[in-house]
Structures are given as structure tokens and as C-alpha cells.
Image 1: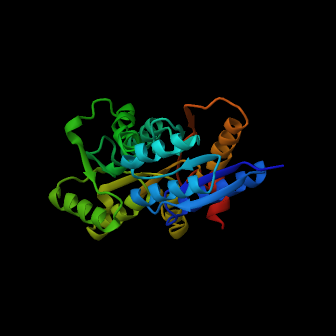
Image 2: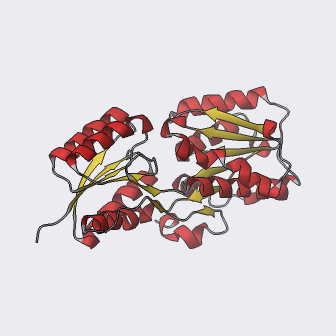
Image 3: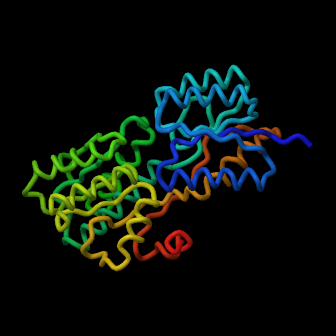
Length: 301
């Protein structure tokens, strides 16, 4: 019996979450008996377009696209539509594709709640400011991961003022991010209660480096979107006390489950099912208290 052929182009393969996404796709394809064609978009829009062309040439029946550059989405969709190939867009939406991935509004909200809870418990009140470190290249939908953090923070501190919210658009370059956060800390020496929301693992690691280099650990708390950067931090710092550390949580996207959602959805469509509009994963904040329960296999690996 002829197998369905499904293409998957990964956002990149530089950090653990990206590797987990790829491996989940491979596992799901094996379990569902489909052939999987892999590509790496390397954080590059032009490369993503090239990979899309290659997928069409290879005759894939469906295409799963994970691409950071929202601006090339229309080009990719035009090509796929012309070839009659259904597309599933992972985390970064593309008009005309089924969206799979994060519920970005909820991910941002629960990160803000966590920052509010830690600020209340550690400092006895609201933070002096909320610093949101983001990457705008992924587009407005994905930016909800950080822009909704004030909403969550206000569940703990309803009167938290908008003029206390600061934004840094650092992009994906870690060195640039570290410099921009360092500049912010230097410009605000009187802030001793700084809550920080980081867009992803790369930004979180760079932000933590900036805080530590500035000697401002006592002044800052941080929650990051994505879990593996935080889990790596826990592995590297197993004996730290949560009451005095900067990085106090990561919003789990459960990347190791992505394939079980989206490859199955693609197979269902190829077998005559209706094309879904949205498929969301469920999110949870990972802390020292629950990390072993949720990700013990990774912490012990």
C-alpha cells in the first residue's frame, strides 16, 4: 500500500525544543505509517521558501511548516495552494493554513500570573516595572506570548500601571539581546523589583547573563516562554533556592508532543477529513516544584 508523504520543515535545529519537535514528528510518522521528508529552515525566510519548493518537487501530500519569518508566509502558501498541498503552520500562522501550536494568549497570561505571584511572595507587592523582551519577526500573533503578560500580572495586581511596562525588541541574536537588557538595567539603577518576561529560551539565557553581569540578581525575576531553556537551567543549578533566583519559571509548550497532534491532523485530512482551522496545545508553567513530575525524563537524561 502506498504511504502518504508528509513534509516537515523545522524552524531551526539549534536548541533542545527544536530537536524535540523534529523527533516528535519522526515518532508520529512511524506510528502512523507515513513517510516523512525533513528540512531545516535555519531561522531564515529565504531558506524556508527554498525548502517549500523542494517539498513540492519531492511530491509531498501535505506540508508542515515551522518558519520564524512571517513575511514569507504568503509566498509559501501561494506555491502550496498552486500544487494542491494542504499546509499546517506550526506556531507562526500563515493565511490559508491550519494553525497548530501555542495558544499564545494563554501562554502569555499564565507567565504574567507567575511573575505576579513571585513578586507578591518575594517582594511583598507589585514590581517596579515589567520588562518584556521580545522578537517581533514572528508576527503579532506569536507576540501575544509576551504582550499578554501584563494581563496575567494584573490578575495579581489589578492596578499595575501601563507606564510601568517596558518593551525590548531584541530579535533572535543573543549578543544583541544581552546588550539591550544590560543597557536597560544601566538606565534604571533605582528599580529594585524588576519582573521580566522573555519571549523564548535564547532571549531568556541572554537576559539572565545581562542580569548576572550587572550584579542585579536580587532586583530581578524572570519567566520565559518555552520549557527547555528553563529545564537546562535547573539541570545546571540543581541546588539553588527558588526564593533567591532570577529564573523562576518556564511556560511549557510540550514540544515533545507536537508530532502526535499535527502529523495525525495531516493524515486525517489526507484521508478525507475536514481541514481544521486551529489546533492548540495546552500550557502549564514549569517551576522547581513541578519540573520533576512534568519532565523528569529530561532532567534525569
